[in-house]
Image (cartoon, rainbow, N blue to C red; front, side, top):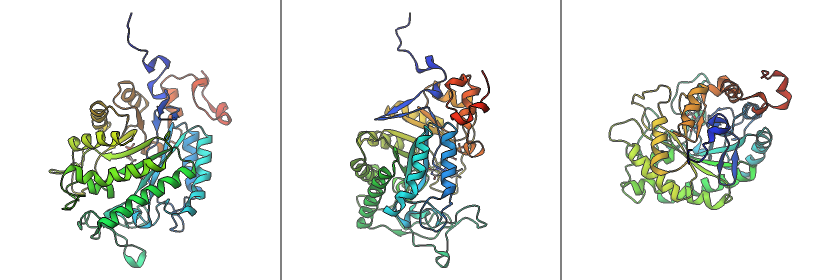
Length: 373
Ligand SMILES: Cc1cc2nc3c(=O)[nH]c(=O)nc-3n(C[C@H](O)[C@H](O)[C@H](O)COP(=O)(O)O)c2cc1C
């Protein structure tokens, strides 16, 4: 007889086992990652009825955790003029009705807080524009960054002063406090994809010579200050996540070794989950995009640091997702573009993986549409 503890698979697919993070129990391990919708109507950072439909339908679709899109901590921190935000108390109510009904659907609702740094003031995609900076006459603004180095063809950013850095820390803190008031259940700090916190981490974008540049410890300083400030204003029982790029895919840039050290430090500072992504810092690299291409990074951080992780990136099939979680490469998977194609992806995956009808989180109103056992 085996003396191994019962594995979570004894109760069916690993993908549909609950996951506990501090006081939060997430109903399963199929999550929706943050995805910008660039759909604010009045450039006021307030989510709209579109956002309500978008998020609530994924809640009804069975996702365990939904992480709301990159939400700006300040107007200058928006990726585009059409981004959502939480830089003002006025924005709290615009989120609250969405949060209430996502939670009512049974999903947990987190939010990603972001400052876009040198990638701010850019054109929202799919609005008939090329990518690049928004000109001032169309409402663009001066961007900031660790160093005055432009991203690709974007406008050159202004170097943040140390006082300016302290303001950014306070903005993340205040936005997190507002997210708590709106009812969100997890905060995710966006330190990936070449946005401001990622720009500080990466030596290709951070060439400062003060205490925020140079050594890894210095480049990490802003992120850690943000984590400490956020952790101090959110409830003890609320999980805190950081999304990080495990590599920038560039030579002499940011890589897995530095990410691992950073993840270990984040764990010491009360971070509960690392959302492992890659890329976004430089625009002239080739990324070997293929199914599961970011999973090995997630697995590495999970094993080396001993911290819960999510894996993301071209995970589109139920058995593929199940294998990642069942083989303990990640604690949960995130389904991005496939969830834009099918908001009911988790219900579909549950059925595909053999869950009986009674065990699937169908909304009661939809039960007559459920496939019979
Ligand atoms: C429309 C769209 C918007 C996105 N916006 C964000 C975002 O706000 N924050 C973020 O961290 N990643 C963002 N991403 C990246 C996704 O979270 C995800 O990591 C990526 O799409 C890879 O997963 P997938 O292959 O399942 O789509 C976005 C992706 C898409 C397609």
